[in-house]
Image 1: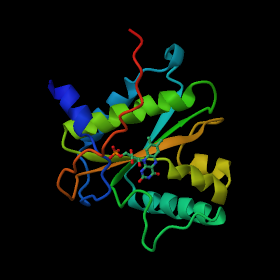
Image 2 (image 1 turned 180 degrees about the vertical axis):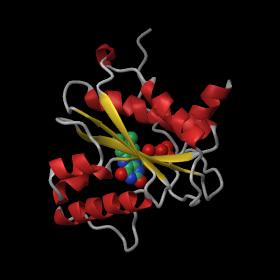
Image 3 (image 1 turned 90 degrees about the vertical axis):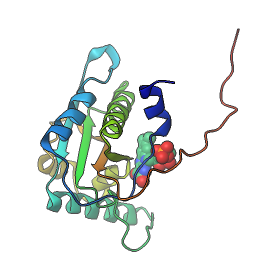
Image 4 (image 1 turned 45 degrees about the vertical axis):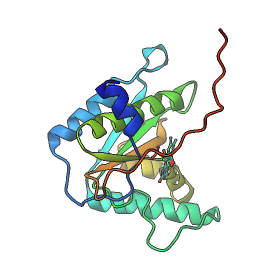
Length: 179
Ligand SMILES: Cc1cc2nc3c(=O)[nH]c(=O)nc-3n(C[C@H](O)[C@H](O)[C@H](O)COP(=O)(O)O)c2cc1C
């Protein structure tokens, strides 16, 4: 139909990444597209932490897995919440009002921008489990999350190490029209 519609219909979550780091320009473009997401009352009351530090990515993975284990959520051996992606962006906000919807708009903008540049992404909710393992203040300090904010959602990025996957089938009977 047009390039944008095509991109939206073809986007898939990528869970297999090459280790290569994205360029600074690619990261900046993804961040900018996140910033241009809509937000309720245009509050833009969100914060992004861009993590390319491999040790920090590993630490977040460890904390989230331990947090999940505490809740009895088991994962297979070797599971990595970011699938070893080289870039992770943590979206945080004061959890109130429409903050989660705003954050959702951010990550989808970022995912589509990434795809348009040949970069894979996967939205990650599991980072929230970090808070089950370590206290909020320590995590927020380490991740430069502003006071009174907390991690809402995350998204990881990298060059795909696999061929483009077919879109997952969508449920059909979810629309009514009132004509
Ligand atoms: C709010 C949200 C949280 C998600 N959290 C995770 C996650 O923690 N780990 C993961 O592998 N995928 C996660 N996903 C990706 C979904 O599993 C994925 O979008 C869904 O299966 C549809 O597949 P597609 O993105 O390839 O179309 C999340 C998606 C959303 C919207």
